[in-house]
Image (cartoon, rainbow, N blue to C red):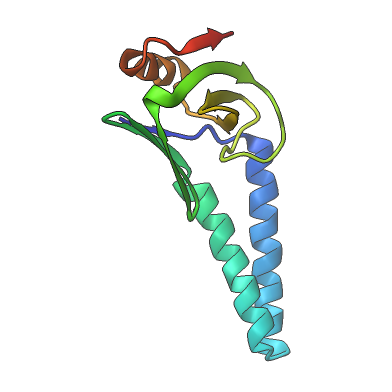
Amino acid sequence: MMFSSIKDIWMGIVIWILIGAFSWLFYQTAFIQKNAFGSMLLLALVTLLAAVWFSTHYIIEDDVLHITYGPLKKAIHINEIRSIRYTTNPFVAPSLSAQRIEVNYGKFQTVQISPKDKVVFVNELREKNPNIQLDI
């Protein structure tokens, strides 16, 4: 089952301002200054930000939670998940919202994600691993 990420307005504003600024700098660098290295770097940044905005999602498939955040991918075995709690931590995570779920798995590993339908997401995980503790 696939879950899209919640997209906060403030996160959208930040990402789209950066995309706009980097696009303008790309134009300046590529067509006015004719700097190939600078234009390639800026194009890569624009592509990365767009990929993060459009492709962040989470898939529960068989016994694995797949996390996709732009070009980055992570797989977590659901039977390794120890606990889940809701958090509003604003720090960097594969999430486009401050309304997050913190997933603790393995020995000391943590990831914060923001699926749109948190209740269905958590229920789906607990269906596959009823030992997951909810710290709500």
